[in-house]
Length: 460
Ligand SMILES: Cc1cc2nc3c(=O)[nH]c(=O)nc-3n(C[C@H](O)[C@H](O)[C@H](O)COP(=O)(O)OP(=O)(O)OC[C@H]3O[C@@H](n4cnc5c(N)ncnc54)[C@H](O)[C@@H]3O)c2cc1C
Ligand code: SF4
Image (cartoon, rainbow, N blue to C red; front, side):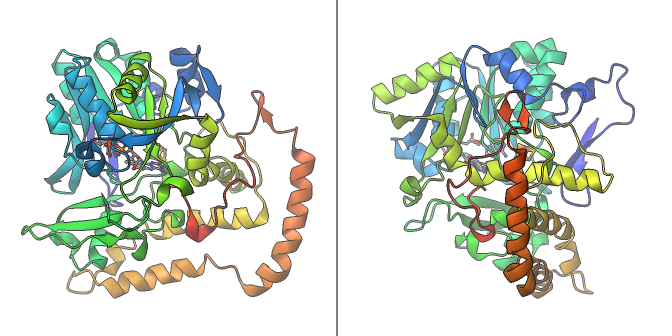
């Protein structure tokens, strides 16, 4: 099996022949032959309390690492690197596998292996960039020891499924550190942002997506490009760049539109950004945490007791509120995308969400996001001039064309929209109760909690 970039800028696994037992289909998180996140979470943490969209939880928290070494270098509150460093320092694991900047061809980020807590202080912040576990897994198989590995939800699920197939992985991977995830971007996201800050994509060595800019809100992330000849651009608020609004879904992996796990429900702990008004004012960042594993929970409690962590215990509902945009897109939005795909006769993987219609205004948003994902797939490649140089204006023209789709025509907004909305609401009210899936209402996020207009999407 090989893992390489396809022409869309996504890392893709390919193999010549399927295995005799079809093991790959039992591992892939999007395969209908693999158990879903509920089954895995029940197997691992069936004894814990459970909350809708959060999965099992021992305790939830919001806060940050007190030491600036962790928080300053972290994406949000520095909880991820603090925890990984503790695992090594307390000899709970021999290796931490996490993501670090890289400069190998188009691999601007890659999984790397650390054995000393100090190595974790200054590693890369969030990689909104394709990474692959292939080399890390090969290392685990070849080197006995105890491992912790950071993983976005679909990677966490794949690891759990792999552990069921492979006893060596099951024995050696002791902790899966879940990274809450809005969606993943192709290589072209980094390159398109670089083009807008004056760096030709072919000259790009690597990027930073989460530079903390003092005075800005925590969700106003600084983008920095590093060139092959050693130059570095000044941090720019990503939201000021085209594609920097996550609600538009530019350069998104198609798979992410069929994903229904935001909070890494199968990981031993889930860590994300506290996207809540109370915490977003502080550019230094706050993390949300969902602890599941008893050892990790004990470590957190000890960190709180000795003053290394400034965390408050919160209800899981606070975690849900901090991720409302992403949860809505991956539940109500997914239900709508499933209906649309089924009407068009397209294949969709089996999900925990049932197909269902959203209200007309939400439907418009979800359909726009599908369009913008599709239309940005090759937008960067189409920005080259005859000499092969990327032209910012060619990119901007295409994107502005796409963004025009975000605004429905006036007639539709003033007349057709409201009429459809009334009809939708009537249908929705009539259908409540019919939509119970395994004892819960179709994983629809709470209505009226936090608004999610297209231009202020709160998930990453
Ligand atoms: C693709 C992506 C999408 C995200 N979407 C959301 C979202 O919608 N909502 C939200 O609240 N948070 C999201 N996050 C998580 C968020 O960006 C921070 O990682 C999280 O808040 C932890 O910050 P921290 O300061 O506590 O941890 P840190 O101290 O920064 O530690 C984070 C750890 O994650 C590792 N890591 C970085 N990138 C990756 C990656 N791609 N795969 C695996 N491990 C990685 C780092 O190596 C580090 O060990 C996303 C992260 C990624 C990578
Ligand atoms: S949105 Fe889902 S499928 Fe996409 S990267 Fe995140 S966890 Fe994986």
